[in-house]
Length: 590
Image (cartoon, rainbow, N blue to C red; front, side):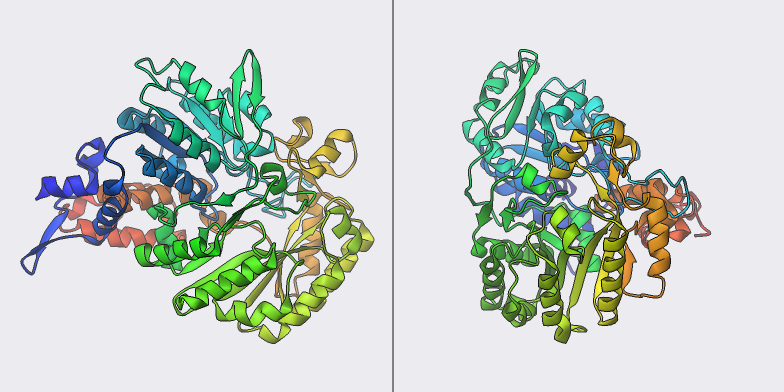
Protein backbone atom coordinates (compact mmCIF):
# COMPACT_ATOMS: atom_id res chain seq x y z
CA UNK A 1 0.00 0.00 0.00
CA UNK A 2 2.85 2.40 0.73
CA UNK A 3 4.32 1.91 -2.74
CA UNK A 4 0.89 2.58 -4.23
CA UNK A 5 0.55 5.76 -2.16
CA UNK A 6 3.93 6.97 -3.44
CA UNK A 7 2.70 6.59 -7.03
CA UNK A 8 -0.48 8.53 -6.27
CA UNK A 9 1.50 11.22 -4.51
CA UNK A 10 4.10 11.43 -7.26
CA UNK A 11 6.88 10.56 -4.80
CA UNK A 12 7.98 7.27 -6.33
CA UNK A 13 10.97 8.82 -8.13
CA UNK A 14 11.49 11.83 -5.83
CA UNK A 15 14.68 11.72 -3.80
CA UNK A 16 13.17 14.05 -1.22
CA UNK A 17 10.71 11.38 -0.09
CA UNK A 18 12.99 10.26 2.73
CA UNK A 19 12.16 13.47 4.58
CA UNK A 20 8.43 12.86 4.46
CA UNK A 21 6.62 11.31 7.38
CA UNK A 22 5.47 7.68 7.32
CA UNK A 23 3.04 6.05 7.46
CA UNK A 24 1.15 8.23 5.01
CA UNK A 25 -1.69 5.73 4.87
CA UNK A 26 -3.63 5.03 8.06
CA UNK A 27 -6.27 2.41 8.69
CA UNK A 28 -9.62 3.83 9.74
CA UNK A 29 -12.92 1.92 9.95
CA UNK A 30 -11.43 -0.87 7.87
CA UNK A 31 -10.23 1.49 5.13
CA UNK A 32 -6.85 2.91 4.19
CA UNK A 33 -7.01 6.71 4.21
CA UNK A 34 -4.61 9.57 3.57
CA UNK A 35 -3.87 12.37 5.98
CA UNK A 36 -5.30 15.80 5.21
CA UNK A 37 -2.15 17.15 3.54
CA UNK A 38 -1.74 14.05 1.39
CA UNK A 39 -5.37 14.12 0.26
CA UNK A 40 -4.76 17.45 -1.42
CA UNK A 41 -1.68 16.11 -3.27
CA UNK A 42 -3.51 12.98 -4.45
CA UNK A 43 -6.51 14.98 -5.65
CA UNK A 44 -4.24 17.26 -7.68
CA UNK A 45 -2.41 14.27 -9.15
CA UNK A 46 -5.69 12.62 -10.23
CA UNK A 47 -7.20 15.88 -11.51
CA UNK A 48 -4.14 17.09 -13.43
CA UNK A 49 -1.00 14.95 -13.67
CA UNK A 50 -2.67 11.59 -14.36
CA UNK A 51 -4.89 13.07 -17.09
CA UNK A 52 -2.20 14.58 -19.30
CA UNK A 53 -1.50 13.10 -22.76
CA UNK A 54 0.19 9.69 -22.50
CA UNK A 55 3.14 10.74 -24.68
CA UNK A 56 5.73 12.90 -22.95
CA UNK A 57 6.59 15.93 -25.10
CA UNK A 58 9.34 17.39 -22.98
CA UNK A 59 10.29 18.60 -19.51
CA UNK A 60 10.11 22.21 -18.36
CA UNK A 61 10.90 23.81 -15.01
CA UNK A 62 9.14 27.07 -14.16
CA UNK A 63 11.01 29.33 -11.71
CA UNK A 64 8.91 31.94 -9.96
CA UNK A 65 11.75 34.35 -9.15
CA UNK A 66 9.74 36.47 -6.74
CA UNK A 67 11.44 37.15 -3.40
CA UNK A 68 8.67 39.57 -2.34
CA UNK A 69 6.83 37.89 0.51
CA UNK A 70 5.24 40.64 2.61
CA UNK A 71 2.00 40.45 0.63
CA UNK A 72 2.33 36.94 -0.74
CA UNK A 73 1.20 36.60 -4.35
CA UNK A 74 0.99 33.23 -6.03
CA UNK A 75 2.46 32.50 -9.48
CA UNK A 76 -0.86 32.80 -11.30
CA UNK A 77 0.74 33.79 -14.62
CA UNK A 78 3.05 30.78 -14.50
CA UNK A 79 0.14 28.55 -13.50
CA UNK A 80 -1.57 29.56 -16.75
CA UNK A 81 1.58 28.81 -18.81
CA UNK A 82 2.04 25.57 -16.90
CA UNK A 83 -1.50 24.45 -17.82
CA UNK A 84 -0.75 25.14 -21.51
CA UNK A 85 2.36 22.96 -21.39
CA UNK A 86 0.77 20.12 -19.41
CA UNK A 87 -2.16 19.89 -21.83
CA UNK A 88 0.40 19.53 -24.62
CA UNK A 89 2.08 16.59 -22.90
CA UNK A 90 4.97 18.36 -21.16
CA UNK A 91 6.09 17.17 -17.74
CA UNK A 92 6.30 20.35 -15.68
CA UNK A 93 7.35 21.58 -12.28
CA UNK A 94 6.91 25.00 -10.72
CA UNK A 95 9.10 26.35 -7.94
CA UNK A 96 9.72 29.52 -5.97
CA UNK A 97 13.19 28.95 -4.49
CA UNK A 98 12.78 31.84 -2.05
CA UNK A 99 9.86 30.20 -0.27
CA UNK A 100 10.90 26.56 -0.67
CA UNK A 101 14.58 26.41 0.31
CA UNK A 102 16.53 27.85 3.22
CA UNK A 103 19.38 28.32 0.73
CA UNK A 104 17.37 29.39 -2.36
CA UNK A 105 20.13 29.10 -4.96
CA UNK A 106 21.53 25.79 -3.75
CA UNK A 107 18.02 24.40 -3.47
CA UNK A 108 17.26 25.51 -7.03
CA UNK A 109 20.40 23.86 -8.38
CA UNK A 110 19.60 20.60 -6.58
CA UNK A 111 16.05 20.71 -7.95
CA UNK A 112 17.41 21.07 -11.49
CA UNK A 113 19.61 18.03 -10.89
CA UNK A 114 16.65 15.98 -9.63
CA UNK A 115 14.03 17.06 -12.13
CA UNK A 116 16.30 17.10 -15.20
CA UNK A 117 14.35 19.65 -17.27
CA UNK A 118 15.07 20.25 -20.94
CA UNK A 119 14.41 23.97 -20.59
CA UNK A 120 13.76 26.47 -17.81
CA UNK A 121 11.40 29.47 -17.80
CA UNK A 122 11.91 32.29 -15.29
CA UNK A 123 9.18 34.71 -14.23
CA UNK A 124 10.45 38.20 -13.33
CA UNK A 125 7.19 39.64 -11.99
CA UNK A 126 8.08 42.49 -9.64
CA UNK A 127 10.80 45.13 -9.86
CA UNK A 128 10.31 46.08 -6.21
CA UNK A 129 7.76 46.23 -3.40
CA UNK A 130 6.38 49.57 -4.72
CA UNK A 131 6.70 51.02 -1.22
CA UNK A 132 8.79 54.17 -0.99
CA UNK A 133 9.19 54.67 2.76
CA UNK A 134 9.06 51.87 5.32
CA UNK A 135 10.21 53.90 8.32
CA UNK A 136 10.12 57.59 9.17
CA UNK A 137 13.62 57.24 10.64
CA UNK A 138 16.69 57.34 8.42
CA UNK A 139 18.50 59.46 5.86
CA UNK A 140 16.02 62.08 4.60
CA UNK A 141 17.40 61.77 1.06
CA UNK A 142 17.22 57.95 0.90
CA UNK A 143 14.35 55.58 0.06
CA UNK A 144 13.40 52.20 1.53
CA UNK A 145 12.10 50.49 -1.61
CA UNK A 146 12.90 46.76 -1.54
CA UNK A 147 14.39 45.84 -4.90
CA UNK A 148 13.86 42.41 -6.50
CA UNK A 149 16.25 42.55 -9.43
CA UNK A 150 19.41 41.62 -7.45
CA UNK A 151 17.73 38.38 -6.37
CA UNK A 152 16.54 37.65 -9.91
CA UNK A 153 20.15 38.11 -11.03
CA UNK A 154 21.19 35.50 -8.44
CA UNK A 155 18.65 33.07 -9.91
CA UNK A 156 20.08 33.58 -13.41
CA UNK A 157 23.62 33.08 -12.08
CA UNK A 158 22.60 29.89 -10.25
CA UNK A 159 21.39 28.45 -13.56
CA UNK A 160 24.61 29.16 -15.45
CA UNK A 161 25.59 25.49 -15.32
CA UNK A 162 22.36 24.37 -17.00
CA UNK A 163 23.11 23.77 -20.69
CA UNK A 164 19.55 23.75 -22.00
CA UNK A 165 17.63 26.89 -22.98
CA UNK A 166 16.75 29.35 -20.19
CA UNK A 167 14.22 32.04 -21.04
CA UNK A 168 12.72 34.85 -18.99
CA UNK A 169 9.52 36.90 -19.04
CA UNK A 170 7.13 38.64 -16.71
CA UNK A 171 5.75 42.13 -16.14
CA UNK A 172 8.99 43.57 -14.77
CA UNK A 173 11.10 42.05 -17.54
CA UNK A 174 8.80 43.52 -20.19
CA UNK A 175 9.53 47.09 -19.12
CA UNK A 176 13.03 47.04 -20.61
CA UNK A 177 13.59 43.56 -22.05
CA UNK A 178 16.82 44.11 -24.00
CA UNK A 179 18.40 45.85 -21.03
CA UNK A 180 17.40 43.09 -18.62
CA UNK A 181 18.45 40.32 -21.01
CA UNK A 182 21.93 41.87 -21.18
CA UNK A 183 22.13 42.45 -17.44
CA UNK A 184 21.14 38.83 -16.70
CA UNK A 185 23.32 37.40 -19.50
CA UNK A 186 20.48 35.23 -20.80
CA UNK A 187 19.83 34.15 -24.38
CA UNK A 188 16.04 34.13 -24.63
CA UNK A 189 13.14 36.25 -23.40
CA UNK A 190 9.44 37.03 -23.85
CA UNK A 191 8.02 40.51 -23.36
CA UNK A 192 4.35 41.22 -22.75
CA UNK A 193 1.80 38.40 -22.81
CA UNK A 194 3.61 35.05 -22.87
CA UNK A 195 0.76 32.60 -23.43
CA UNK A 196 0.60 33.03 -27.26
CA UNK A 197 4.32 32.30 -27.50
CA UNK A 198 4.19 29.31 -25.18
CA UNK A 199 1.14 27.90 -26.96
CA UNK A 200 2.93 28.16 -30.31
CA UNK A 201 6.07 26.64 -28.81
CA UNK A 202 4.11 23.64 -27.57
CA UNK A 203 2.27 23.19 -30.88
CA UNK A 204 5.50 23.25 -32.89
CA UNK A 205 7.51 21.11 -30.47
CA UNK A 206 9.07 17.90 -31.76
CA UNK A 207 11.35 15.46 -30.03
CA UNK A 208 14.41 16.63 -31.97
CA UNK A 209 14.13 20.35 -31.08
CA UNK A 210 16.67 19.64 -28.35
CA UNK A 211 18.96 16.82 -29.37
CA UNK A 212 21.34 14.61 -27.44
CA UNK A 213 23.60 17.59 -26.72
CA UNK A 214 21.57 19.97 -24.48
CA UNK A 215 23.99 22.76 -25.33
CA UNK A 216 23.06 22.62 -29.02
CA UNK A 217 20.25 25.17 -29.35
CA UNK A 218 20.21 25.37 -33.13
CA UNK A 219 16.71 24.01 -33.77
CA UNK A 220 15.36 25.53 -30.57
CA UNK A 221 16.68 28.98 -31.54
CA UNK A 222 15.08 28.62 -34.97
CA UNK A 223 11.75 27.74 -33.36
CA UNK A 224 12.06 30.49 -30.75
CA UNK A 225 12.73 33.12 -33.42
CA UNK A 226 9.27 32.46 -34.89
CA UNK A 227 7.33 33.09 -31.66
CA UNK A 228 5.36 36.29 -31.00
CA UNK A 229 6.91 38.60 -28.35
CA UNK A 230 10.15 36.58 -28.45
CA UNK A 231 13.65 38.01 -27.91
CA UNK A 232 16.86 36.15 -28.66
CA UNK A 233 20.54 36.82 -29.23
CA UNK A 234 21.89 36.66 -32.74
CA UNK A 235 25.21 37.94 -34.06
CA UNK A 236 26.03 39.82 -30.89
CA UNK A 237 22.70 41.70 -30.87
CA UNK A 238 19.29 41.11 -29.28
CA UNK A 239 16.46 40.67 -31.77
CA UNK A 240 12.75 40.77 -31.04
CA UNK A 241 9.48 39.84 -32.72
CA UNK A 242 6.26 41.83 -32.63
CA UNK A 243 3.77 41.02 -29.91
CA UNK A 244 0.66 39.00 -30.70
CA UNK A 245 -2.26 40.99 -32.07
CA UNK A 246 -5.49 41.60 -30.18
CA UNK A 247 -7.12 38.25 -29.60
CA UNK A 248 -9.62 36.32 -27.55
CA UNK A 249 -8.10 34.54 -24.55
CA UNK A 250 -9.04 30.87 -24.44
CA UNK A 251 -7.13 29.56 -21.42
CA UNK A 252 -8.45 26.51 -19.62
CA UNK A 253 -10.53 27.09 -16.48
CA UNK A 254 -8.82 24.05 -14.91
CA UNK A 255 -5.88 25.91 -13.39
CA UNK A 256 -3.65 23.88 -11.11
CA UNK A 257 -3.12 26.19 -8.15
CA UNK A 258 0.13 26.33 -6.21
CA UNK A 259 -1.20 25.03 -2.92
CA UNK A 260 1.38 26.66 -0.65
CA UNK A 261 -0.02 30.04 -1.72
CA UNK A 262 -3.67 29.10 -2.24
CA UNK A 263 -4.05 27.31 1.09
CA UNK A 264 -2.96 30.41 2.99
CA UNK A 265 -5.53 32.44 1.10
CA UNK A 266 -8.28 29.87 1.69
CA UNK A 267 -7.43 29.76 5.39
CA UNK A 268 -7.40 33.56 5.75
CA UNK A 269 -10.24 34.28 3.26
CA UNK A 270 -7.88 36.27 1.05
CA UNK A 271 -8.64 36.64 -2.68
CA UNK A 272 -7.18 34.30 -5.29
CA UNK A 273 -6.65 35.68 -8.82
CA UNK A 274 -8.76 34.88 -11.86
CA UNK A 275 -7.92 36.50 -15.19
CA UNK A 276 -10.60 38.07 -17.35
CA UNK A 277 -8.47 40.19 -19.67
CA UNK A 278 -4.91 41.14 -20.54
CA UNK A 279 -3.64 44.60 -21.23
CA UNK A 280 -4.99 48.07 -20.60
CA UNK A 281 -6.11 50.73 -23.09
CA UNK A 282 -5.28 53.50 -20.63
CA UNK A 283 -1.87 55.13 -20.65
CA UNK A 284 -1.19 56.35 -17.11
CA UNK A 285 2.18 58.09 -16.94
CA UNK A 286 3.62 55.89 -14.18
CA UNK A 287 2.21 52.49 -15.10
CA UNK A 288 4.02 49.62 -16.80
CA UNK A 289 0.84 47.87 -17.98
CA UNK A 290 0.46 49.68 -21.29
CA UNK A 291 4.22 49.26 -21.83
CA UNK A 292 4.05 45.49 -21.36
CA UNK A 293 0.79 44.65 -23.03
CA UNK A 294 -0.02 47.46 -25.51
CA UNK A 295 -3.15 45.62 -26.67
CA UNK A 296 -6.33 44.37 -25.04
CA UNK A 297 -7.26 40.69 -25.07
CA UNK A 298 -10.43 39.35 -23.50
CA UNK A 299 -11.65 36.05 -22.16
CA UNK A 300 -15.34 35.23 -22.37
CA UNK A 301 -17.29 35.97 -19.21
CA UNK A 302 -18.46 32.35 -19.20
CA UNK A 303 -14.87 31.08 -19.11
CA UNK A 304 -13.99 33.44 -16.27
CA UNK A 305 -16.88 32.12 -14.18
CA UNK A 306 -15.98 28.55 -15.21
CA UNK A 307 -12.60 29.06 -13.56
CA UNK A 308 -14.18 30.60 -10.47
CA UNK A 309 -16.51 27.62 -10.17
CA UNK A 310 -13.73 25.09 -10.77
CA UNK A 311 -11.51 26.71 -8.13
CA UNK A 312 -14.42 26.79 -5.68
CA UNK A 313 -15.26 23.10 -6.15
CA UNK A 314 -11.68 21.83 -6.47
CA UNK A 315 -9.84 23.92 -3.88
CA UNK A 316 -12.54 25.42 -1.70
CA UNK A 317 -11.55 28.95 -2.74
CA UNK A 318 -14.36 31.34 -1.88
CA UNK A 319 -12.79 34.77 -2.36
CA UNK A 320 -11.52 35.88 -5.78
CA UNK A 321 -9.73 38.86 -7.27
CA UNK A 322 -10.38 39.64 -10.93
CA UNK A 323 -6.78 40.00 -12.09
CA UNK A 324 -7.42 42.63 -14.77
CA UNK A 325 -5.73 46.01 -14.87
CA UNK A 326 -9.15 47.67 -14.72
CA UNK A 327 -12.07 45.24 -14.56
CA UNK A 328 -14.62 47.83 -15.70
CA UNK A 329 -12.89 48.78 -18.95
CA UNK A 330 -15.30 48.38 -20.68
CA UNK A 331 -18.10 48.57 -18.11
CA UNK A 332 -20.24 45.86 -19.69
CA UNK A 333 -17.46 43.36 -18.93
CA UNK A 334 -17.92 44.01 -15.21
CA UNK A 335 -21.72 43.88 -15.26
CA UNK A 336 -21.66 40.81 -17.51
CA UNK A 337 -19.45 39.02 -15.00
CA UNK A 338 -21.80 39.95 -12.14
CA UNK A 339 -24.84 38.72 -14.09
CA UNK A 340 -23.19 35.38 -14.89
CA UNK A 341 -22.22 34.83 -11.23
CA UNK A 342 -25.82 35.49 -10.18
CA UNK A 343 -27.23 33.34 -13.01
CA UNK A 344 -25.21 30.36 -11.77
CA UNK A 345 -26.28 31.06 -8.20
CA UNK A 346 -22.64 31.38 -7.13
CA UNK A 347 -23.24 34.69 -5.36
CA UNK A 348 -24.36 32.75 -2.29
CA UNK A 349 -21.01 30.94 -2.13
CA UNK A 350 -18.30 33.41 -3.16
CA UNK A 351 -17.04 36.96 -2.71
CA UNK A 352 -14.92 38.83 -5.21
CA UNK A 353 -12.99 42.04 -5.65
CA UNK A 354 -11.46 43.98 -8.52
CA UNK A 355 -9.42 47.01 -9.53
CA UNK A 356 -11.70 49.64 -11.06
CA UNK A 357 -11.20 52.86 -12.97
CA UNK A 358 -13.22 55.99 -12.28
CA UNK A 359 -14.23 56.14 -15.95
CA UNK A 360 -16.20 54.41 -17.18
CA UNK A 361 -18.14 53.55 -14.01
CA UNK A 362 -21.92 53.45 -13.88
CA UNK A 363 -23.54 54.12 -10.51
CA UNK A 364 -26.69 52.31 -11.64
CA UNK A 365 -24.72 49.03 -11.66
CA UNK A 366 -23.83 49.14 -7.94
CA UNK A 367 -26.87 47.11 -6.70
CA UNK A 368 -26.13 44.30 -9.20
CA UNK A 369 -22.43 44.29 -8.34
CA UNK A 370 -23.14 44.13 -4.59
CA UNK A 371 -25.71 41.35 -5.09
CA UNK A 372 -23.18 39.30 -7.08
CA UNK A 373 -20.68 39.33 -4.20
CA UNK A 374 -18.38 42.19 -5.20
CA UNK A 375 -17.53 43.25 -1.66
CA UNK A 376 -14.39 45.38 -2.14
CA UNK A 377 -14.29 48.10 -4.79
CA UNK A 378 -10.67 49.18 -5.33
CA UNK A 379 -10.25 52.44 -7.22
CA UNK A 380 -7.01 54.21 -8.16
CA UNK A 381 -8.18 57.78 -7.56
CA UNK A 382 -4.50 58.87 -7.48
CA UNK A 383 -5.28 62.50 -6.56
CA UNK A 384 -8.03 65.11 -6.24
CA UNK A 385 -6.35 68.02 -7.97
CA UNK A 386 -7.05 68.06 -11.71
CA UNK A 387 -3.57 69.40 -12.45
CA UNK A 388 -1.92 66.31 -10.97
CA UNK A 389 -4.48 63.99 -12.56
CA UNK A 390 -3.54 65.53 -15.88
CA UNK A 391 0.16 64.98 -15.15
CA UNK A 392 -0.59 61.33 -14.35
CA UNK A 393 -2.46 61.15 -17.69
CA UNK A 394 -5.67 59.93 -16.04
CA UNK A 395 -8.85 59.83 -18.13
CA UNK A 396 -10.95 61.31 -15.31
CA UNK A 397 -11.10 64.43 -13.17
CA UNK A 398 -12.20 65.30 -9.64
CA UNK A 399 -15.85 65.68 -10.64
CA UNK A 400 -15.85 62.00 -11.66
CA UNK A 401 -14.43 61.01 -8.27
CA UNK A 402 -17.04 63.08 -6.48
CA UNK A 403 -19.81 61.33 -8.43
CA UNK A 404 -18.44 57.89 -7.45
CA UNK A 405 -18.22 58.79 -3.75
CA UNK A 406 -21.74 60.20 -3.77
CA UNK A 407 -23.04 57.04 -5.42
CA UNK A 408 -21.38 54.74 -2.89
CA UNK A 409 -22.24 56.70 0.24
CA UNK A 410 -25.52 54.79 0.86
CA UNK A 411 -23.54 51.51 0.78
CA UNK A 412 -20.99 52.42 3.45
CA UNK A 413 -21.06 49.67 6.06
CA UNK A 414 -22.22 47.08 3.54
CA UNK A 415 -19.23 47.08 1.16
CA UNK A 416 -15.63 48.25 1.21
CA UNK A 417 -14.44 51.06 -1.04
CA UNK A 418 -10.67 51.55 -1.06
CA UNK A 419 -9.21 54.52 -2.91
CA UNK A 420 -5.49 54.65 -3.69
CA UNK A 421 -3.77 58.04 -3.71
CA UNK A 422 -0.29 58.93 -5.04
CA UNK A 423 1.04 62.02 -3.28
CA UNK A 424 4.26 63.74 -4.27
CA UNK A 425 4.44 62.66 -7.92
CA UNK A 426 5.39 64.78 -10.95
CA UNK A 427 3.15 67.84 -11.03
CA UNK A 428 2.79 68.03 -7.25
CA UNK A 429 3.44 71.32 -5.44
CA UNK A 430 2.37 72.86 -2.15
CA UNK A 431 -1.03 73.94 -3.45
CA UNK A 432 -1.97 70.60 -5.04
CA UNK A 433 -0.72 68.70 -1.97
CA UNK A 434 -2.74 70.87 0.41
CA UNK A 435 -5.86 70.39 -1.71
CA UNK A 436 -5.49 66.60 -1.86
CA UNK A 437 -4.98 66.34 1.91
CA UNK A 438 -8.03 68.50 2.55
CA UNK A 439 -10.27 66.44 0.27
CA UNK A 440 -9.01 63.13 1.70
CA UNK A 441 -9.83 64.27 5.24
CA UNK A 442 -13.26 65.51 4.22
CA UNK A 443 -14.20 62.29 2.44
CA UNK A 444 -12.76 60.13 5.22
CA UNK A 445 -15.22 61.80 7.61
CA UNK A 446 -17.97 60.53 5.31
CA UNK A 447 -16.73 56.96 5.92
CA UNK A 448 -14.46 56.37 2.91
CA UNK A 449 -11.02 54.74 3.21
CA UNK A 450 -7.86 56.03 1.53
CA UNK A 451 -4.43 54.42 1.13
CA UNK A 452 -1.66 56.74 0.01
CA UNK A 453 1.91 56.30 -1.15
CA UNK A 454 4.60 58.96 -0.82
CA UNK A 455 6.30 59.73 -4.10
CA UNK A 456 5.99 57.81 -7.35
CA UNK A 457 8.25 54.98 -8.54
CA UNK A 458 9.63 55.87 -11.98
CA UNK A 459 9.84 52.70 -14.10
CA UNK A 460 11.82 52.29 -17.34
CA UNK A 461 9.83 52.67 -20.53
CA UNK A 462 6.90 54.53 -18.98
CA UNK A 463 6.10 58.16 -19.88
CA UNK A 464 7.55 59.26 -16.56
CA UNK A 465 10.61 57.06 -17.22
CA UNK A 466 11.16 58.73 -20.58
CA UNK A 467 10.68 62.12 -18.95
CA UNK A 468 13.51 61.33 -16.53
CA UNK A 469 15.87 60.27 -19.33
CA UNK A 470 15.21 63.56 -21.12
CA UNK A 471 16.28 65.56 -18.04
CA UNK A 472 18.02 63.28 -15.49
CA UNK A 473 19.49 66.21 -13.57
CA UNK A 474 16.10 67.73 -12.75
CA UNK A 475 15.19 68.14 -9.11
CA UNK A 476 12.79 65.79 -7.34
CA UNK A 477 14.45 62.45 -8.16
CA UNK A 478 15.76 60.14 -5.42
CA UNK A 479 17.21 56.67 -5.08
CA UNK A 480 19.98 54.60 -6.71
CA UNK A 481 18.05 54.45 -9.98
CA UNK A 482 19.28 57.94 -10.81
CA UNK A 483 22.50 56.31 -12.04
CA UNK A 484 21.06 53.39 -14.04
CA UNK A 485 17.95 54.81 -15.69
CA UNK A 486 15.51 53.33 -13.22
CA UNK A 487 16.57 49.66 -13.14
CA UNK A 488 17.20 50.31 -9.46
CA UNK A 489 14.71 52.22 -7.32
CA UNK A 490 14.08 55.64 -8.85
CA UNK A 491 11.57 57.81 -7.00
CA UNK A 492 10.11 61.21 -7.79
CA UNK A 493 8.93 63.16 -4.76
CA UNK A 494 7.80 66.78 -4.45
CA UNK A 495 7.67 69.25 -2.85
CA UNK A 496 10.01 67.46 -0.40
CA UNK A 497 12.16 64.33 -0.17
CA UNK A 498 10.10 61.17 0.39
CA UNK A 499 10.95 60.56 4.05
CA UNK A 500 10.43 64.22 4.96
CA UNK A 501 7.12 64.27 3.10
CA UNK A 502 6.03 60.99 4.71
CA UNK A 503 6.63 62.41 8.21
CA UNK A 504 4.66 65.51 7.32
CA UNK A 505 1.72 63.52 5.98
CA UNK A 506 1.78 61.16 8.94
CA UNK A 507 1.37 64.11 11.27
CA UNK A 508 -1.36 65.66 9.14
CA UNK A 509 -3.43 62.47 9.04
CA UNK A 510 -2.84 61.29 12.61
CA UNK A 511 -6.35 62.30 13.64
CA UNK A 512 -7.97 60.82 10.51
CA UNK A 513 -8.60 57.10 11.17
CA UNK A 514 -9.53 56.11 7.61
CA UNK A 515 -6.39 57.40 5.90
CA UNK A 516 -3.37 55.06 5.82
CA UNK A 517 0.12 55.19 4.37
CA UNK A 518 0.90 52.03 2.40
CA UNK A 519 3.58 50.05 4.21
CA UNK A 520 4.82 46.58 5.02
CA UNK A 521 2.44 44.19 6.77
CA UNK A 522 3.73 40.69 7.52
CA UNK A 523 7.46 41.34 7.88
CA UNK A 524 7.33 44.51 9.98
CA UNK A 525 7.90 42.86 13.36
CA UNK A 526 9.83 39.69 12.64
CA UNK A 527 11.92 40.85 9.68
CA UNK A 528 12.17 39.71 6.07
CA UNK A 529 14.54 36.74 6.46
CA UNK A 530 12.75 35.25 9.47
CA UNK A 531 9.39 35.47 7.70
CA UNK A 532 10.91 33.89 4.58
CA UNK A 533 12.15 30.97 6.71
CA UNK A 534 8.64 30.56 8.12
CA UNK A 535 7.33 30.23 4.55
CA UNK A 536 9.99 27.59 3.84
CA UNK A 537 8.69 25.67 6.86
CA UNK A 538 5.11 26.15 5.63
CA UNK A 539 6.00 24.63 2.24
CA UNK A 540 7.78 21.70 3.89
CA UNK A 541 4.76 21.02 6.09
CA UNK A 542 2.35 20.99 3.14
CA UNK A 543 4.76 18.65 1.32
CA UNK A 544 4.66 16.16 4.19
CA UNK A 545 8.20 16.91 5.45
CA UNK A 546 7.14 17.57 9.03
CA UNK A 547 10.47 17.13 10.80
CA UNK A 548 12.17 19.48 8.33
CA UNK A 549 9.40 22.04 8.85
CA UNK A 550 9.67 21.77 12.62
CA UNK A 551 13.44 22.12 12.59
CA UNK A 552 13.20 25.18 10.37
CA UNK A 553 10.73 26.86 12.71
CA UNK A 554 12.84 25.98 15.73
CA UNK A 555 15.77 27.83 14.18
CA UNK A 556 13.88 31.12 13.76
CA UNK A 557 14.75 33.68 16.39
CA UNK A 558 11.84 35.65 17.84
CA UNK A 559 9.35 33.22 16.33
CA UNK A 560 6.99 34.17 19.14
CA UNK A 561 6.41 37.49 17.35
CA UNK A 562 4.75 35.63 14.47
CA UNK A 563 1.47 34.17 15.64
CA UNK A 564 0.95 31.99 12.57
CA UNK A 565 4.48 30.57 12.98
CA UNK A 566 3.84 29.62 16.59
CA UNK A 567 0.53 27.99 15.60
CA UNK A 568 2.23 25.89 12.91
CA UNK A 569 4.97 24.86 15.33
CA UNK A 570 2.38 23.65 17.86
CA UNK A 571 0.55 21.70 15.14
CA UNK A 572 3.76 20.01 14.03
CA UNK A 573 4.71 19.19 17.61
CA UNK A 574 1.41 17.35 18.02
CA UNK A 575 1.88 15.46 14.75
CA UNK A 576 5.46 14.49 15.47
CA UNK A 577 4.97 13.52 19.12
CA UNK A 578 3.65 10.12 18.03
CA UNK A 579 6.76 9.25 15.98
CA UNK A 580 9.64 11.35 17.36
CA UNK A 581 10.95 11.26 20.96
CA UNK A 582 9.98 14.46 22.78
CA UNK A 583 13.59 15.28 23.64
CA UNK A 584 14.44 15.46 19.92
CA UNK A 585 11.79 18.05 19.10
CA UNK A 586 13.57 20.97 20.78
CA UNK A 587 12.02 24.38 21.33
CA UNK A 588 10.06 23.07 24.26
CA UNK A 589 9.54 26.51 25.73
CA UNK A 590 7.62 27.79 22.72
